[in-house]
Image 1 (cartoon, rainbow, N blue to C red):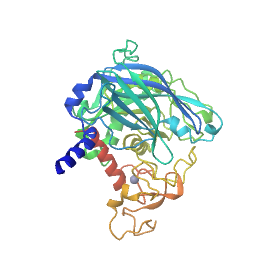
Image 2: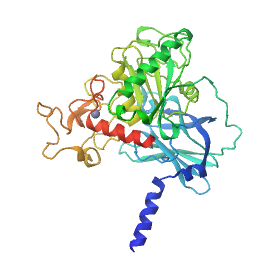
Image 3: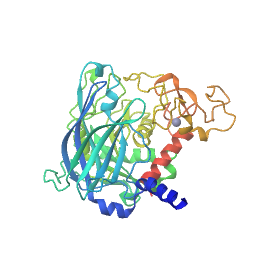
Image 4: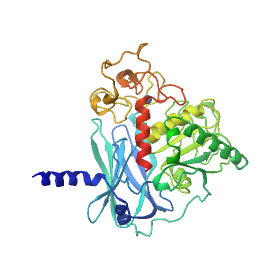
Length: 425
Ligand SMILES: [Zn+2]
């Protein structure tokens, strides 16, 4: 009976752990990129497949193939079609997923280009896409069968550009690889981009906890050239012809800087092995965005750019939520107060034991009073995730709450470390 229990436990645990042999069995070199169109209104969503690419690099792990975090508004799972074995999975969020919570989404359908990448499969795969429901459970959206020998899978780099290694720690499959792309830099500003890329590399590697893991991180720079300098500021009537067509005023919020040109971003990023994409925008205006396992974007020359860079990367890399609740955002009812949000640094207290409860010292009241005496205490402080009531944050202050560089709270710090260790081993 005991043996039976051990075997049962092994069967349950087995899909969570992959080996280098599994990687060799199921995957070859390079990556498979699946582009698709995500169409949505506030209550309906549809995915339509677009192009497939065999890209030359794979920056991800050969061992941690199955997602263990369960973060994101969406996830995809890859199954070997013959054995039905789960061979790869990732959670992620998207700009379309945020747009669904805007006022505009109640009135019309819109479409956004998105991509997922995975190591290039050896055999036919089934790729299943899921969206997270309000109660946090997953609902299957669609499934596509892909034969890696399909001659319509293009092996060509659509935007071949030399990638430069800004910070080199070793083999991409054993490191966290971040690719920096130039947005709104003209040909004559390429040296500025390379200098900016060096400066932002320092911002990240000097910020805790990244400063303890500098040898686990590779940073690449792809000097993509724009026709004009800067970025669109639509609310001020300013429009620039740039390679990724980025713009402020996303969802009507001035500081919210994004781009919907996903195909160009992916074409440029394909020049380097990458786990995370970061767009550096040649502007001194305050703003940025970070979407979990999608991309980060920020401006290069604002006086708070060091803070914005690490704050947005907190979203895109570690799945961290905004801990602030006093600034305007373009989305409404983004969190359901009756369920526990997936982000590791906010809680509705519905399932606090699944969050950072174990990091709270005995005797700390929950909810924790937002008063003097609790400044450096891990607790549950009311206000976070864009609302003043019903969502709680771990600490009075944090880089996910205020404009403070190098000041992540203990819960955000742990989340970042956990994620670094998932990529780097
Ligand atoms: Zn925090």
